[in-house]
Length: 541
Image (cartoon, rainbow, N blue to C red; front, side):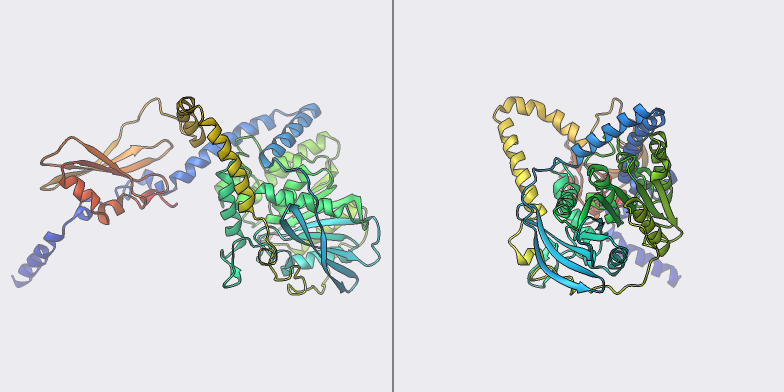
């Protein structure tokens, strides 16, 4: 009896604290079909992308003549230039050698040039002893490393190439090495912890302006080729390009865009957008061209655009860039090389390892360039002494941003946005016409399509309380998902008004952490709460 009374009083103790939290539980928890609803936003994007990629695949499937492939190739080149650019007029590079290092069998020149006026690129050129004129050259583009091209694996590859008689040119990409743009001057450290964050932070600014930061990454590399061609040591007809990961990305871009590059070997990058979306998801901003998939392009197009020039796709079977996508892109690109009669000019090198440069793949790459840049020799990957990051410092302070009063992607994009705003103000001069066009613009830019039919909501439960009722619903969304919703209706003094609340942290937060809902219901208003894709129980997935 005493035990029973104790339980009874504990129950009474909690009665006064009953709130909406007792009324509402996440009703998606027991709807098995919607158990992955938190991925709804991502899957909706994927569904759109897969439909666009399917349209592209049908066009590729129907190509069976040389004329058809050449027409497709022209389309890809034109479309790629349009969505990657527009690129500016070339301005003086103002190239400057800031120092030289004498090493065993080669010299390193430390360089700076301006890809845009006031936008500085740190670079280095490695010159084999005796390579005084018309030597074969490799543009090595590094992946996402804090130290830029100074990372030990990149230096190992560069020095191996130099030892094999190649002049090697390399640069720091934006947000790496000596080109950090978000720099804390007080701590003398990057504000963002890894290059990927800096790339995408700048990338978001450009995407909302209607283009990708790829424009700047590509232009830095194009101007790098321009610099290479000012040097008598380099044979303009024997230029190759390679790089891993993010460097493979820029290699693939340049191979498709710049006719001056004779042979390319993108490493640990080429896959397909279908498998990118199905596996790791889209990567850094510069690896995604604005509306690229909508315009009918995929990774294979980077290879097909340069046919029949020599190309080697380098990959690893356990890379986070899907190996199935790599094989699919290679097999598709084989078709244009075969039909043009240059089937030997496209090859693939694979190793059973993770996302890295393996010895097997390095030696395949050395042999590829030795063959196609007419520089015979042993492809053996040898142990070499590499220069350290301190030796390779190019600027006075170790960072462009603290050495020069320099441009940045932010400042370059700001100029573009200011021009866009002037155009916008001009359109607003005829205000009535501008207002009439706003619904079309909003719908077009948002990708929203008003439904022809609204599917009925699913009623999923009700709680009755003294002062209100709480009803739960699953409301069909615009994709293959439902929106969880809660409707609270006051029992007394209901005034006929309905207030829709979308809380930035989800409907749970609106119910449990915000007094607004209770105040509105107490004042006689019905309140409808719901989560949207990416918010609350529908995110982050």
